[in-house]
Image (tube, rainbow, N blue to C red; front, side):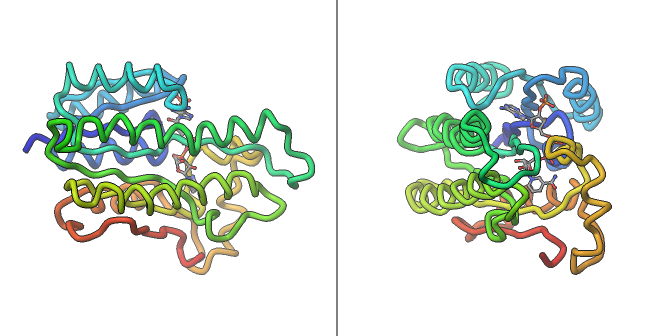
Length: 248
Ligand code: NAP
C-alpha cells in the first residue's frame, strides 16, 4: 500500500524532523505550516532530495475550512491518506493561572485541542473502510506537561495536552475495529524554537540539570517514536503513549 502522510506544523522542530524521517521510510509527505513559507520550503527541498513526492501547504490547522482545503490537495496531489501526525501546537508566556486572559486560553484550546480533533475527523474520512479507505495511523504530539501539570509555568498548555491525551484514548477505541491505530507521544524539554513562545529561547539548556538524563532531547529522537508508532512494527499498539522526557 502507498504511504501518504500529513504532518501538521512541519516547517521546523519536531514536525520537520518527522517529515525527513517519514521520507526516509518511503512516505509521500505533506508538510503543513502556518506562516513561515521559507522554512517549509527548506524542509520540502530536503524531503525531495530523498526521492519522495512531497508538497507544502499553508493552513491554520485550527480552522476547519483550511483543514478541508489541505486534505483536498493531498487527495489530488499525493493520493489517499494513510497517516496523520497532529504535531502543530502553541504555548503562552510563562505565567500563573490568575494572569491568563480569555484570548490566550481560547487560542490555546483551539490550536492544541480543536485543531487535532478536526484533522483526525478529516483523516478518518479517508482512512476508514466505511469511507472506502484501508485503515491507517494517527499520532498526536502531546507533552509530559499533561502528566506534570506545569504549575506556575503554563497550566493551560498542560491542560490542553491532557485533553489531547483523552482524545487519543477515546478515538483509539472508537476506530480500533477499522484498522486505524491512534497513539500519542509525550516529549519533555526538546531543543526547538518552541520555547521562544513561552518567553525563553534558552529554556532547555537552563533546565537540563533538572532532567534525570541530564540533557534536553532532540527533535529527531521524538520523530523516531512517531514513525515507529505509525509503522507495522507497532501493529498491536493503540490508545497508548511513548514518553520522551529523559526520565521526567
Ligand atoms: P516549533 O518548533 O515551534 O514548531 C511549531 C510548528 O507548528 C511550526 O511549523 C508552526 O508553523 C506550526 N504551527 C503552529 N500553529 C499552527 C497552526 N495553527 N496551524 C498549522 N501549523 C501551526 O515547535 P516544536 O517544539 O517542534 O513543537 C511541536 C509539538 O511538540 C507541539 O505540539 C508542542 O506542544 C509539542 N511539544 C514540544 C516540546 C518541546 O520542548 N519543544 C515539548 C513537549 C511537546 P509556522 O512556523 O509556519 O508558524
